[in-house]
Image (cartoon, rainbow over all chains, first blue to last red; front, side):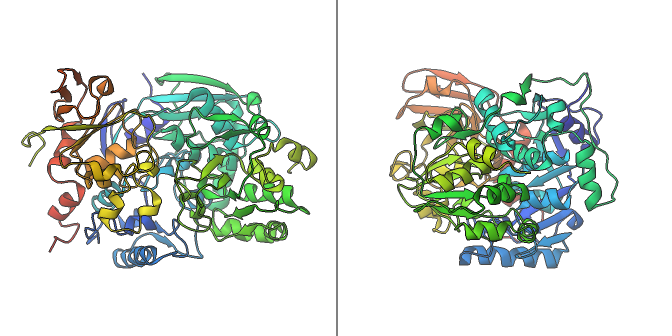
Length: 426
Length: 174
């Protein structure tokens, strides 16, 4: 009996011949990413200054959750992060002005390579699955233990395989594919997810990355995508380091295999205050004429250059509707710079949007777009949970960047298709 | 102390949240991050039942639905424990929540069927190491697979921070 992609990475890294679902695997990892939040004061107020670490060359520290520091708590955390990196000799620090959101940075800088095992304290770490990495989020204490001792544990999960067929249709994005899977199959808790099939290769890397990121919201553990020519090209542009991708064995065992026809995917929206079991088509929600106060484009899911391109294309020569705040947060400072050079930031600013520096920002309700009671927001970020973006009495709708941009223009939750047909995005 | 040496049997009043998919934004809302620990724990599950944390008595046992604690990696089990909750027993747990519970030494059990066996206010006896729940009020029971010994050992040792201090990775307290 063969192994899935995630089982192969766990086996390779831990030196086992075979890994099966249910096995507890104690292993080191290839890359440990510590976000600024690792160094925050925690509710137990215990001192967490590390005295030594096993593999400083595998540790990257980055500031993303609150950047630049919106309060003294974040300022203290980031000071401690820098101090740790200096004192213990970590591989890299991506600091204010030089980085961005973790999962975008891992992808654009290829901080990890195909076939590697990646751990971080952020729950959306499965995003690195787009790079053929086995990656998932751990808790703050777990990541501290991993950074210190160099080792952690995983309970290997059964795998659900999604075979994507057909082509990604016009006007439909990685976020819509995720919402489609959420609607059809719901939560996959306790399982790894593996993607394959010819349809995946029709998806641009940005859309695949969005899909891998959002599988966290299906409660998946590891999320794996295979290597193809497009990914190899992306990696080659960044590094000439060698890597060993994993592919699933033909006789790998799956808890379920679902064949998904991409042609059936349409723009979709998750209604407040949950995603799974709560998704409708954008056209149906648009018919309700739901007025919005805020529209947000950003986060590790949708702060990519392609997101800013779509938003700029739809908003060029138009204005954000009266009474609506459109906030656009690039996924990294590199995305910001490219968007600046491409003219997207000028276009968005002329239309009345606020373009912020790169940070988790409004997605995590920390700063740069916190919601008041009674407000309605449509967002292309990661979660629409009650209280996620500020007040527990705010309502959050979750969709693709195109749907958010179209809604910002109309002032009500909108179907992006008429906008996209009028202005197809190159 | 190893997991086999600790007394894993806990008895307490059941506090039931039967809803599925209660997430960490509801358990540990962002607006509490800058507050002192006691005020932060006062917000636990507040958006579902306002003021609930103040009604917890030390030793109460939280009984929850499916995928309890799904969502972010924030240390939700820790703020729950600070309300006085002695253990969390759920139909199923979010993966990172389970890991966090172990790491912060909060006794947890995934026990499918627990919601059928227990209702709010019942007296329950939970055996974390054996994976059993006994309803002392009604006589009903539920059973499941307990955590592996390695993880019980981490809880028994006082969690990850205690282990790291023991092994010289963190400075000792005081």
